[in-house]
Amino acid sequence: MSLSKIKHIILVLSGKGGVGKSSVTTQLALSLALSGHSVGVLDVDLTGPSMPRMFNIENAKVTQAPGGWLPVPVHAADPDAGIGELRCMSLGFLLRGRGDAVVWRGPKKTAMIRQFLSDVLWGEMDYLLIDTPPGTSDEHISLAETLLKDALPGQVAGAVVVTTPQAVATADVRKELNFCVKTSIPVIGVIENMAGFVCPNCAECTDIFGKGGGQVMANDFHVRFLGGVPIDPQFVMLIETGRRPTYPQGTIINGQDFSGASVDAEETKDASLLAVKYQSCSLEPIFKKMTRDIIAAVE
Ligand SMILES: Nc1ncnc2c1ncn2[C@@H]1O[C@H](COP(=O)(O)OP(=O)(O)OP(=O)(O)O)[C@@H](O)[C@H]1O
Ligand code: SF4
Image (cartoon, rainbow, N blue to C red; front, side):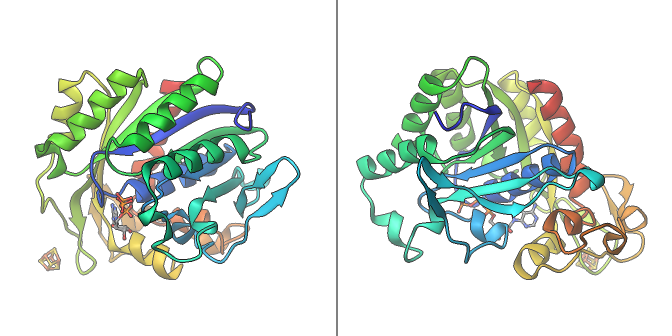
């Protein structure tokens, strides 16, 4: 099986669309790579594959090798800088137009997910993050069945469930957690995205949608709360334009003065890398801590 040399497989799930599951997957991947791990991202969100856009590799072409598809490199490993390699495979690379997969029927989607799990030549890798479609559809059940059937014991480390403060109030996230219970996929933890807004004009981080629901939900299901992630327009800017994040002096996020702590990307070896620029983003320390907790939970 093409996944056999991967140490840990983590599913990223969300009860509904638009809660920032792909952004969370991107940042977890960058944080894991920045902590020296080799990372693969498999984008099986067939209704809206966004990983090529997030990693700025939209025009990349997937190469077909004798044994299967070769994942697209996002960046190579840089052992001197302590950065692990990052690679990505997404249906987005294979679609002709953006709406192509949306019109597929269930069996075709299921077949494509199975093929993605079996035919991508990942090779040796510390972590594989799987970005899933929102909800608990047939695609999820197929994905869970295939993974659990084919994986080595302990290889599927579990699921990270992404929610927002508003989504916590709906049944969708509970459905997602119940799905994990039913399919025997361990829940590594819950992340509450869009917990607050980092204002680009001043030093404030405001809880516009409320905060704390993710913690309550995690307590209800006896799973770990990995943390809250504010909305940071600088992160969107980084993804959309590749511009390194900068903040007004005295920007305080989660009690941390971020403007003083930002990394001078220009001083590092390859300042053009997304991962290096991401180190200047206010969200990076939050994901660094969550990544440490995830590593501790699965290794
Ligand atoms: N914490 C955040 N700070 C800033 N922008 C964010 C944050 N989380 C998500 N976004 C932005 O919100 C938009 C939707 O996020 P994303 O695509 O990650 O959601 P999703 O749950 O994967 O959506 P879908 O269900 O369509 O796959 C993106 O433009 C993303 O950049
Ligand atoms: S946080 Fe401050 S600068 Fe930003 S919108 Fe509110 S008052 Fe204005």
